[in-house]
Image 1: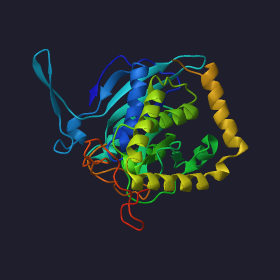
Image 2: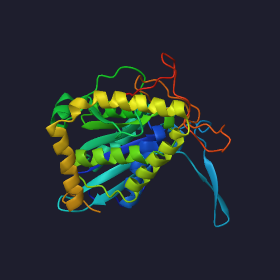
Image 3: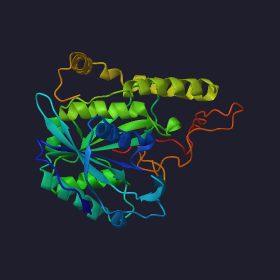
Image 4: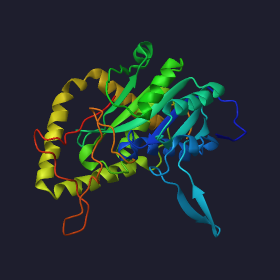
Length: 333
């Protein structure tokens, strides 16, 4: 472990973590933490020793040139701190890295050691999974916890998931056993357009995080990137009648399932978000190998989500799965 000195005393700190790989469809979760680090100018204070947790044949180091000198970047997990000002200041400890290849319990214990030393009050782990959701609708975000009391207080789901899990699930359980309140936020990414980046899913995760911890997140160009992404996918899908019909079927299923959500409470919640952003009243200041998590916990498609076999050479979504086939995807809690 490499420790860097100079970590200030933190105010009501929340740890926000995301890991590239199985739990990061479309790189939506890791990009969200990278956005926070960039917008708030995070200062790295520690990095976990790559030798302890990574198989370098799976996650290979990269070589680059700097001022004529060859250097190596090793895959690892880094911790940084950001100071969020405003009427109710709150600091964030950002954890960003790659899902480890080995020694997951030691990995989680090391992160929990940092959380304890820094006085972290809540751990929020971000994830993204492949699901049967249309790209034309708002990105579904589910918030889960293993703590029944925390679920009631923060309006979250108490997770009942059983099956294969990734480092997001393991870290959340490690926090629970250590007595550290922990929540995971999951974005559902359309399985037919799963390649990174997915700024729409990243934006949805940041909006939900903002509501959860009461800190206004500066979004920068992310909303415009999300709109451009959707327009681009619309154009690609329109080139193939079969894909367009499949997207329409997903839209109809989604709209039917969400009819009860058009309640007064849901509308009021969205209106409150609009007012906070318009008036600036909120507190605060300014995918890896092996596929991705899916609703049933299995791996998502390991290949590229777009095909390049059309005469124009432009990428387009793959054909939708046949009814009753083996390619249907959904999401893990």
